[in-house]
Structures are given as structure tokens and as C-alpha cells.
Image 1 (cartoon, helix red, strand yellow):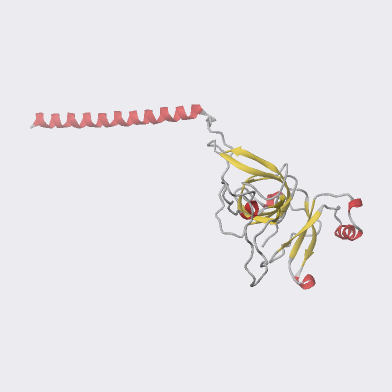
Image 2: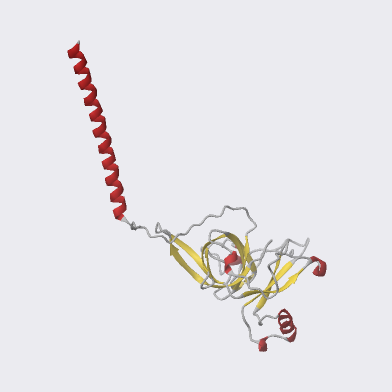
Length: 269
């Protein structure tokens, strides 16, 4: 349990790595995050850090929220998110900014958002029920729900029965998403895959609770790399060739000397 960030879902795009592989990513704009309150075990019963995100007009906030921001000496925000922590960091203080640098490329995160609202839907779309026969004799009952209860005993429909109803517009968390790239100058984070919510919706980014091995999956190096000093490589090849030639010459000279010595010994004998 550690501090996360609050961002705005901007949309989806794709990036290409050095091998030309397309990586689908979601663009998240990290709106201004600052600490609005620090809760401790002694005073509040648990440890947590409250983060305010975005900017808002004072006329759109009530007096209670405005008083809370003025007490923390920060500008009015769009909203607040609380992150429970086991231990409080000493460098954290009320009013301090939480930068996007807290996360790095290759890390895995859990992202929470509110899903798209799809309105009132039937059982086929909401619960993936099978449709009935679409042949002769089935009159306007192709996507009907069918029977929902029993006979006289118990004579009612049990609670929780899968039936048509409202679909979407609920909080959902996608776990173990990989951060592809972070652009600190523009406060933008690129995350592999899709996340809940529509464009412009608020999402919460937290370090994942799953075990993983951090590994960067995106690099911006070009496929055709040009050497900085090609002359150096030529020189090294020339020097290696010259050294090999010298070794060969020296070895041939030693062999010739030894053969001459053997001939002189044979003559003397």
C-alpha cells in the first residue's frame, strides 16, 4: 500500500518500438497532484495520504470544502483521493506536489476508473445469455429472458437473479498494466492496453499488488544505427591485419633460421 497518482484519461494511440512492433497504449494526463491532508494513527486511527487533483473555481465548491483547502493552504481542486499507507514518508508534507516521476517505465500498476454507462440492457448483452431459435414458430421471443422462477413453492423470484437491468457506470480496476513510457515535461503517462472510463474521466493509478519483474518494453532507438566514428573501426581492422602479418613474418623467419642451422650441422658432420 503506497501513494499513487490521479490522472485524466485522454485517449488511446500506439507507439512503435525499435523492431517496428506496434504497442497499443492509453494516454493518461497526470493533473496537478498535491497533498491536502496527512492522516496518522494517533489522530485518525489509520495512516493515509489525501491527494487533491486538478483546479476548480471557488464558486463551484461549498464552504466546507473551501475551508479544508484554505486550512491546507492549497488552491481549490476538482476532487480528492485518499491512499492508505503502512508508513508515512518523512519528506511528505501538506501542500507538497506529487510528481509523475514516482513511477518509471517498465513498472506495473493497477488503474481504477468508472466504466462506460450502457443504460438499460437485456439479458443477452448484460449476462451473455444465449438467444432462442430464430426459426419458424418463434414469435418475437428471440432474445427473451425465459422463465425466471419456480412453481408455487417458493412462488417468487430469488434475489440476485440475472435479469435485464442497468449496465455499466461502475468502478472497475484493471490490474498489472505495464507503463510503456513517461513524459515528465508534459505530465503524460503511456500505459499498455485499455483502462476503464471514457475520454476525460478520472482514473486512479496505484502500484500493483501482484508480483512482477520490472522490464522496459519500449525503446526509441532507430533500427538503422549509424556509427559515430567509422574511421576508428577501419583503423582497428588495419592494425589487427598488420599485427597478424608481423606475427606471420616473424614465424617464417624463425623457421628459416632453424633450417639453416640444421644444414650447417649436417655439413660439419
